[in-house]
Length: 332
Ligand code: TYM
Image (tube, rainbow, N blue to C red):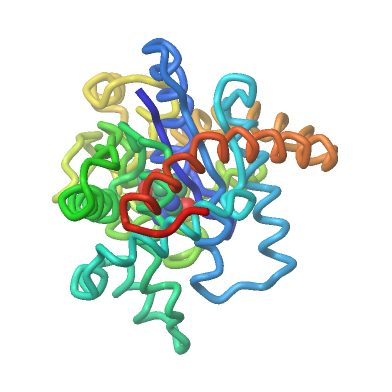
């Protein structure tokens, strides 16, 4: 079994990224090890240039996200952790897969439509983004892709691309499946619970960043939007704010949604909000300490990146060669 997932080098990473991303990476790292498989995780810096960016910020975010991957529990001795641009097979593979991706499919991607609406300059890269993502996944003969719910459409497209390639050129690529967490697959903005928590959109006060100081986190939860009732009950349609907080509590403590509901039966929202904030502080504090440590030694981080890239290329290059050959390219 091989696991692959990627995370963009952009913005500050949020509690949403933790829930749909980092948390799942560590879980699947363990599952892959138990099944005698391998897990591969990638900072997708080439995806980061598809929306407006600053070179110095890209550099900083790449180092930062790489450090977060290790700080939240990925073990570079057991998993392959690397930076996308260090393995040229990704961009080459994306070009080849462009031959079996339809313009109409890309035009239908929700993330493209949303992001394109927000920008004056819509880059060609933003449009072809899902093809690069398909290459990321398919180059590693990936079985399982742990992601949050917002990436579902991209993973489905990756499956279609793989199937089409295989039909057209013969069995070459493994068709992967997406894995989404049961709770916390869509962490919402604490101020606008109908919106996904993201640093690029929505009220900043409702976005919990992994780098936030404990008191900032506490305050964000204290002021979280709920509703006029007082029941701590999971009902995403009618009680979006409270349901989001219940899911966050489940993510932070490992309790089930039902356990959280029964623990706060009759407790009122005030105490509940305070406790969720505290649980998130407890969750994130050790990660932050580890993160600060890792960031204080850039040389060591670069060394880990280099090792990760070599191992990643060892898996990706043979797949890329296979693709070239099947498509009829002359290999001298
Ligand atoms: P990215 O960098 O936006 O997000 C990284 C991971 O975090 C999840 N996530 C969330 N989960 C729950 N609630 C939220 N509010 C939330 N916000 C983000 C995302 O679903 C993701 O799993 N296109 C991808 C990166 C990518 C990739 C790949 C992923 C590139 N190539 C190959 C998997 C496999 C993205 O932009 O994720």
